[in-house]
Image (cartoon, rainbow, N blue to C red):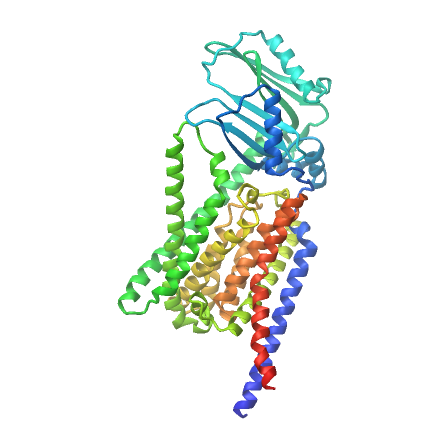
Amino acid sequence: MTAMERGRDMQAGSRWRAGWLVAAGGVGLAVFVLLYRQAFPQAAVTLEVTRPEAVERAREFLSHRGATLDGYRQAAQFGGDDDGLAFLQRTVGLEQASRWARERVPIWSWDVRWFKPAQKEEWRVGVGVDGRVVRFQHLIDEATPGADAPQDSALAQAERFLVERGWSVADFDRVESSSRKRDQRTDHHFTWEHRGTAVAWTGAGDTATGSGAVRLEVDVLGDAVGSYRHFLKVPETFERDVQRTMGVGQLLAIASLGLTFVLVLVALGLTIARHRHGDIRWQPAFRLAGLVFALALIQGVLSWPMARYAYSTELGWGTYIGMLVLILLLGTATYGLWVLFTATAGESLGREAFPRSLGGFMDAVMGRLDPAERARASFSGYAVGFAILGYLTIFYVIAQRYLGAWLPAEGPYSNIFNVYWPFLAPLTISLVAAVTEETTYRLFGISLIKRYARSTALALLVPAAIWAFGHSNYPVFPVYLRGIELTIGGVFFGLAFLQFGLLACIVAHFVIDAVQIGMPLLTSGNPAYVVSGLIVMGIALVPALLGWRLRTAGSQPERDRG
């Protein structure tokens, strides 16, 4: 066979593999789109108000109650009652749970607070997804003077407040009343349960071990209503069952973190040893670590609204800001050093064990990658990413239908609503995770075990398992299921590393995370957040569009020469 014939055979084989890869990616994407809601259950509740709208409604509510907010700092974040939703999902089913969340009880809300540093008094208001105030609290010092009203007078005041909020007290049974004498006032607490909303919880022994119900709570502090809450009371036995199970997941995740720490220490040792022999390429590794540091720093800045809301007034404001800055810098520096040492040691080992898998990676970091190679890595990464998305979707459909697995449903909301510019959060989070985890578990982990254990199978399996069980603290039951799912997924990533290279793996990881994290924006039902979701998906397509453009540009001279 002539050299020309061998070249044609290689090109034909390459086109055949590319065709199968594109087909796998297309099928995976189709499966993800068609079965997404079956695999990852979501409550059907629309977010009708944005953060600014929620803040304005909370301010109006307090203004009507005579609160003076001048001089107070304001913070807001989005949150949900995960236990409440999980309880409803397990007892009445997801469809009914969604209806309850829309009509009977607020599961999600914007939580707004007004506070002053070093002062206990503050105001907190919860605004539901439909814009109604679902709770509020006026925190005051125990020594604040007030009335010593008898309990029956306080009860009448609490009932008037509920009527003003649109409730019919006749639909409720009062289940708790208590009073507490303070230094200069008497406080009263009342709880009502909505008739017809009790839901029994059956534990592992198939016997009822408690019940949940929709409740209202009102506190009267002296002579004024000081707090109000509309919520779902969840049985303590259910909460304990969930916490006990999640404790096992936390243990698995901590064990994985410990093994990852060992990997990073080994990477540090190998970097030092190989540096002495002149076998470490520092410049590209420093660039990669700098990229991760910058992205993690941006993510920390974007998360300022959550940090502001979490402020404890016992601390001085300047002290709190200083602590946040130090934590952010130390955390981002840790990420940067993590990537620096796993990249240096991994690249050094990879040149010996899997030189083809590193093809173009360091050139890409240095900005010198050939356009054709960039296009190839981009397309391969997208195909691998979509194929793995399809696998994850099928895995959970099968696990829920045939293996007794269950996933607590999510609303179309997540922590990305709590950051500045929500469309940026999925991108920064995804890029940090993709670079950090692929350099650690694929580049370094696979190369390390292949180099010293001489086994490709172990090299694929062990880093995949360490990476996978680090996600066991996610609410998936049984808790070991996430580890099994991602161990298989990690092996797929490893095979992609061997076949298509590290750069394709990073693109694939980024695509998977960006799509999954960005989906809550697309499904929120709120036009502003849907637009943010579309921006996320559009930016996530940039590598693919760039690859297509580069490929087109690269083929133009060939056509001109023909």
